[in-house]
Amino acid sequence: MPVTYLDVPAGADLETKRELVHELYVALKEAYPFPDDTRIFIREWPPESVSQNGVLGSEPFRPAFVAHVPQGVDRDVKATMVEKLNAAMAKAYGLPWFITFLHEHSLDVVAVDGELLADDQQRVEDLRAAYS
Image (cartoon, rainbow, N blue to C red; front, side, top):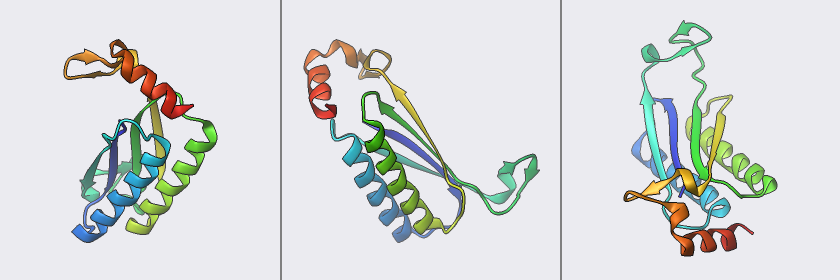
């Protein structure tokens, strides 16, 4: 159930974005196989809307990837995933210094359709089996 946000400069063509989201999905799916509900939001920014170190429109743009993911995945699995995510983003945008934040959430702080995931015992067991 990763929900992700990729903040990048505007301008990549549609085919590049299609390839990128596919590669990001594959990397995320390997680390978080259950459930199959991976969301990737690409947020594009013009240079005049980005400040780095207090300088508006500074170059080169340094993209950020933020992923909200379930707790419980092994550190080595996450490290492999992050390498693949970074390679996909670098290939698509040709920019340096991608920063990735993994926000890990327990099932008692995530709700789907108004119900805490921790209250769905089958989901808890399925997640435990998938991540062990």
